Image (cartoon, rainbow, N blue to C red; front, side):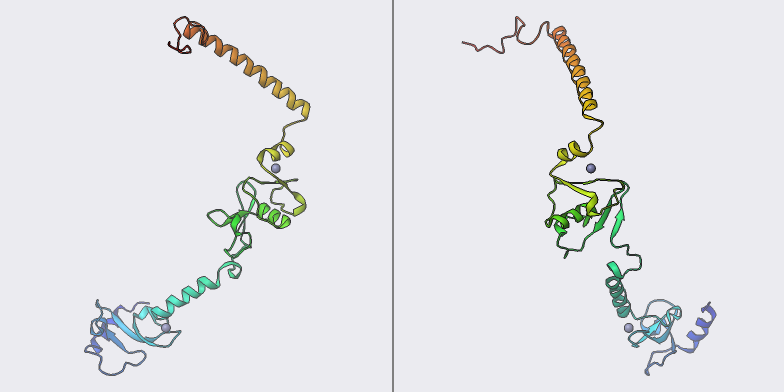
Length: 220
Ligand SMILES: [Zn+2]
Ligand SMILES: [Zn+2]
């Protein structure tokens, strides 16, 4: 809707200071109301507190500034958490496939959250099962995939990372593991021999054998 022409007509009609109490629908030039600019203001009431207010024609039927502020403040509070239609139970799945939840400060396990108030759901559930918050080094293992299955029966607690890895995420059988380690030992042994040879070539002999090396002997 265009108020442009209408504005001009109304301005012409409504010059001069406001002397009587304005009625709803009265129009005035903004300047006559002590406002900056050339526009017209219409006398309207706040849709909430019904207090009279001069406002732009396009804002007729709106809330006054004060009511608008409290309206938005109330909305923010009312729509927090479960009251928000987009609330998914504070539950979200990370790219790695773990469920994270955001806790409110009054949660009994709030001490387990990170700086963003987030905590892995499997850790939270394990803490509830054992009745105390988990220590940072404690690890909760998922017995079966998917890792979004945080049923207490699918979870297992380990004292630390290495206990968890040793029990759950060892590659292959014991025999395969021994063979892998044997191979690694042989490789490292060969590397040590090669490095010793290089040192001999650089120094003209292994450490402590060089004729001009007296760093190891005390001067009298
Ligand atoms: Zn109001
Ligand atoms: Zn695991």
